[in-house]
Figure 1 (tube, rainbow, N blue to C red):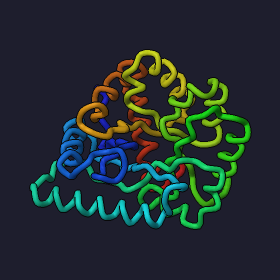
Figure 2: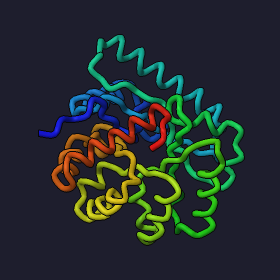
Figure 3: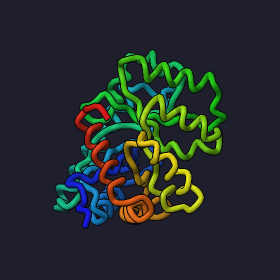
Figure 4: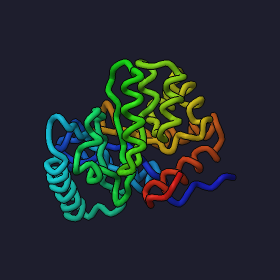
Length: 243
């Protein structure tokens, strides 16, 4: 019997209320947290969308703090203690001038210098890959690629593995649960450069948490040790250690 890790980390959630396209209110956000807890999640990384062309990092952080404080107050008022710990972060949309943002570090996950990066949904050109490589090499932040498998629609597998050689990645639970996407996810996982999985949950209907189901399928397909390794690397990120 393979025991579950002590820390089970959902690395990609849109859990904060009225902040992006996640839950509209604290009630729904709380329901999502309860569902994640029931699925075994102990830590939920809150990765609300950040778009540099829409607002400043400072403005985003103020809005995030307000949403987080309101959610915490709601949980306390409702005596809801059986929920995962929330780790504040962001899903940062990549632009070529992101590296020049003086507040870039403020968008990192928790107290680390790891930052979750979402690539544009467009053809992944050599110029874009080289620009992302510069971000990874800048010394200010350590990128983690959000839902790498999604970019298969815009690049061949060789390019995806090239991205993995630049920075570690996270994959989504929904891709593990989808048969065609699961085959790609399995190949990416075998590279040992995928560092985390995330539910990418947004609500309780169309994009509800499906973490436990994905964990079980992943363990059946590739072995429980793969999930444990993902939790080890995710925990290393949250403590700002090398992976």
